[in-house]
Structure formats: C-alpha cells, structure tokens
Image (tube, rainbow, N blue to C red; front, top):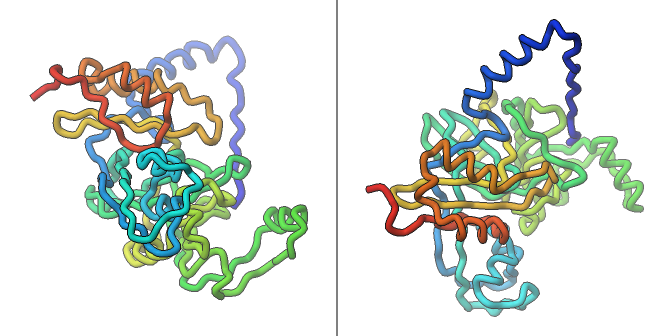
Length: 311
C-alpha cells in the first residue's frame, strides 16, 4: 500500500537533439496507450432501473452496491442527499458505465471511474464497483500480475499505516489475524506492484469511494466471485481516465468523472481527441457534451446529435 515513483533523466547535449526529435515524431503518430490512451469504446455496462429500498439501506450503501454516487441518486430522485429512506419505496438508479477498452484476458481498473472489468478471451465477463486510494494515498497506475491468492488472509500492517494509526491516536496494530474484524475481508489477491492487492472489506458501504491506502477494495460477494475466476499469473492494467466516450450502434455516450488525483485533466481536449480518432465529431451534440463535462456525474450519458447519425 505504498505509492511508487519513477525518476527520468533529462536528455542533454546537442548531439541527442536529432534522435529526440525523431522519437517524438515516431510516437506522435502512434495511438496513445496506457493510462492516458484516447480510446473510443464500443460497450456499456449497467442499466437504468427501479430499486426497491430494503431495510437499513441508505443512499450511500445503494450507491456502493451499484456503482453510483449517492448524490447522483439523490438528484435523480429529487430528494436531499441526507434523506432517510423508507423501506419499500422505489428509487430510480442509473449505473451505466463505459468500458474503457477491451482486453484479451485479465483485469482492467479505471481509477476515476472506480470500476473493475474482468475479461476472458476478449469477452467482458464481469464488471464491479471498487473503492480505491485516497487522494493523499493514491492507487498507482500500470500493468500488474496476480502473484498471490489467499483465503481468510492475515494482514501484516505496513509501517506507514502503523504510523498513521499512531498520529490519529488509534491502537497501533502490527498484525491482524483472519477474523471478522480484518479489514481485508475473506479474500486477498496480491499484485506484482509491491504492497498492493485486490481484497474484500468489512465495510461494504465504502465501495465506490476513494477510501483506501491504495489497494483495490471490492464488495465481499464480488471479491468471492473474482477470486474464484482468476488464477495466479493473471494479468491486469490500472489506468487513469476521467473522461470516456463510446459509440454503441448509432448512439454516442460520454462519461465524466472528477479528476480526484489532480492530474490536470483537460476534459474538452480529451473529448476532441477521442472524437477525432473515432471519427464521431459530427455525431456529437457539443453543447450537451460541455454540460455533461461541467456536471461530472460519473454515469454514461448520450450526447448524440439527432439527425446526423450514421446508419
């Protein structure tokens, strides 16, 4: 659960200038890859539906289970964010999300979107909402492999988290055995990124929030399902894409999230780049797109320009 850093040496000397220019030109003509790739997706997950409120539920717990921010559910139903929910009442829920890209096999996690996607042989099998690192303890991006799988894991508390416990006046724990109070829940999948893993939780309402020390936290039921599916050596990719665009049939969708880690997201410029790469500039209602960028609701919204769509 520790952030990693990389240092780059600056190219120096006039003799390296031609090589540097050649490299820039070479890669400027290639599609972007990794965390900042500009990809036009072709797939959505989720749906619009009515949810019947169960005893003890809150907007936060409902949002955590379905992958929607509580404030968006409240706004969609014309109610205050702090509303007490009445058992049996129905709420409108829209948890449509754009799949950032397709993988052959493995796990794809998009940090701003707080979603995990699991692929096998190019097919999307599952999508789950997740909790990720706080702004001051961010989840790293990059490729990884699953290197360990443990049921009923023991948590060896990192020194950095012990120090945080000490600062906050909490009892400092060095090791938490497998028990109902273990924050890792019942399943742990360790990543090749040192110190990080995918695991369950004893606080399901924390899902779909930035609440962890960098690890990827899933609802206990979702963790059990993913744990059963993947094996050691399974590959994965963590990206940071606050803006996503998809063309599904004749519809264009836009999904916009907060730039939680303050990476300097240029939403409009990113939208222009994806639209150009996907050849959908003329199909987008740009006024509506700007409105969605301003709201940053975190769900997929249609931005198709009526009357100009291709057959």
